[in-house]
Image 1 (spheres, rainbow, N blue to C red):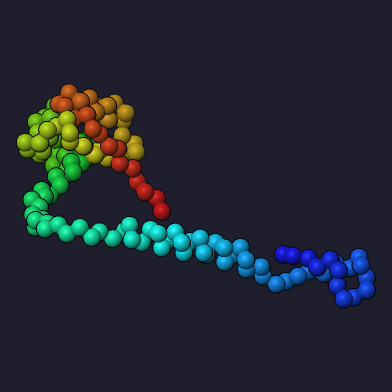
Image 2: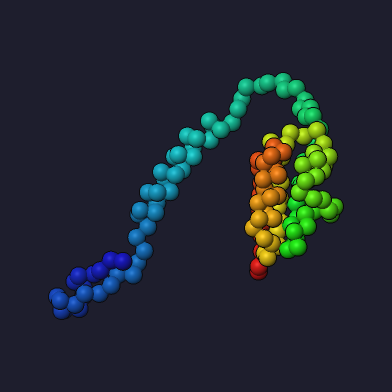
Length: 143
């Protein structure tokens, strides 16, 4: 905002505010932007004609169903909805994933908050012994 130092009043120490908008910088910026767009617009259009082949994409596979392991407070272990034991968990997981590579498979673990740490570590060790190295832990979202 500008200030008017002397006015038609008679007091030379009287300072009044000038409330008019100074549009000169705004016009300068707009002219520069106009020039930039005028130069850039012809560069954005392609004038070379190319006869493109039709796009034929292979049908993508459906992503694999995620594998969930649930550990209850009592120590029972489930793969999906089916109960298993720590001893047979590796074989059951191999049946569950089929021919997929276990080193690239992500396993999601859900455990009760009162589960013994030892039971959880048994499951983790069994997963590593059977080649499942990518493990994600699932927690509850409180809203």
